[in-house]
Amino acid sequence: MADKLEEVERISGNLGLETSLFQQIDIIQLVANPFNSMWTTVYQTSHDLYSIPAIFSCLADTKHESKILDGTDWLRHAGGFNPGFCETSAGTHYVTGRSDGYDFLVKEVYFHALETAQLHINQEFVFLFELFRGEDGCYYAIDECGCKEKVVDIADNVVRFKTSYIMRYITAKQMLYVQFIDSRRSSESSYPMGAELMCEEDCRGDSYHYGIWYQSTKGRDYLFSMLFARSIVRPKNVNECKIWPYDRETEEQFPEFIVAELPDGSYKRFSCDPSKLANYFGANPDAPHYLTPVYFKPDVLDRYRNNPHFKVTERRLSCGTQWSVEIDNIISSRVMVYLGDLGRDLPQSERRHFLAHEISPTEQHMSETAFAEDFLCSFYAPLGPISALFAARDELNNTWTTKFGHPLFRPLHLDESDMEKLIRIPSGNGRQEFDTVILNLTKYCVDYLDETALISAEQSGGINKLEATLSKLMIDADLTPLRDLQKVRSACMAHAKGKKYEQLKGRLLTGDCQKDVSQLVERLASMMSQIASDIELLAADNETDEGIANDESGAAS
Image (cartoon, rainbow, N blue to C red; front, side):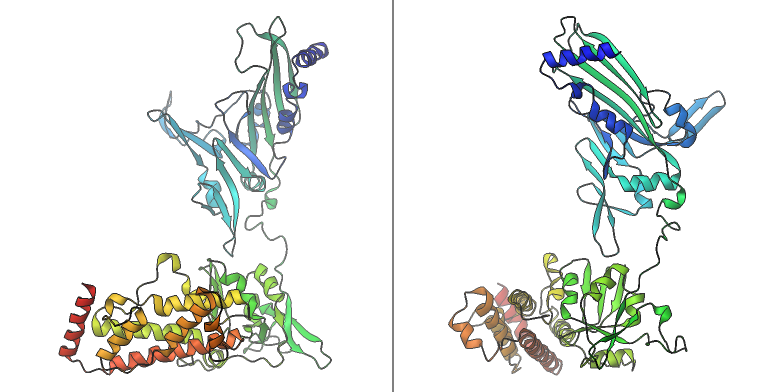
């Protein structure tokens, strides 16, 4: 055999070929260790037999191990595992396609009439790990904060699984991972008729078995090698699958947060573990209370505002229906969360994020709204500035609809459905954040005015039409807050800063972004509430309503 292999080396050398390529050293390494990287190819085909190896992997009962390692050809194929009826001497019975101790990871269904195939991933695998199928057809694990981790990658004729997930899967099922390989290497693009077998090699290890054949022509001007292989990976002990109830590797971490500042400037900290905190029922009397306020920099919420999976309001931070925690974000200079809620409601990963933004509780206090809602159980707690604006806009829109039969504001476009999340009191004095807030606030309050619901005015624009409509209704409304908002947008972001911007400085723009936005928001909310009240006080005068309707019809035409 050694002589024959030396001849293979001579032929490859004479043909200017790489000997290791035809000896298939790279494929043999894959045969010996299928789980050799973060990703494992479980299915692979190619129209060119010599370009890449064909691979198919499946699962098998452990009792089949010796049979699998007895040969090198493929025992199963991607087109198998078909359910249906089977006729035997014992009669006709239904089979699932997986009843013989083998199970698929990828199954191929070929549609001959269309000359095309489709690949399907084992749904038990998908359901066990609760995988999300993306628009690209690949599968993703979604963590408790909506972050995606690709687990199954599906490309042209190649399917790869994240190796760690396959290992967990076979460990949970206590089945073997079985890999079949067909790899061929040729010195020419076509196979010559005169090629004949030179030598062959059969090699068997503890977890693999492969055979490799070498062929050449009599003139030794051609070289071909073909490798068939079977490999297995054995499952670990079931308690290593990291699936409930075997996922309790470490205890949940409850970091300590600042609960007080001491006279020497150091901090008193305490765990956010709810089971270690005091409550109103006498538990842990020497510990801080569950409802101890803990304070954070306002930018602690920035990562959530910039992520579509999260919703941030003045009183709550939530991630879909996965989790939510009560917060106090009404005072713009800080964010407050109760110590016990940090441990009970926040995921472990998010506690670490909050910990990095904590501040001293000295000179901090909870808002009137939080105190009234959480401790006085008041249904009439004062709203924060952003909540008050949203409520006033809704009130005006509903009042207008009731009075005139159509809303004042158009519904938000689907692509701007997150607009309300972008309207907030800035966390600092950064220009980018201020511009984003002003831009979305102007859209929300001005650009979404439904001008078809208003009468025409001498000057164009929604604000002028709204003013003309209110004047027709004999409502003397001060729309200055809307006009000021337009001026700020125009001076700060619609055009390069110049004279208009300088004129606004000192009156609408003080350099304190939090204060400037707060004042604009409060004035807008007050204005909208006043207009809604004035409309409700209007006498139900059919003549007036009819006149407005006629004007609207004329404007629409």
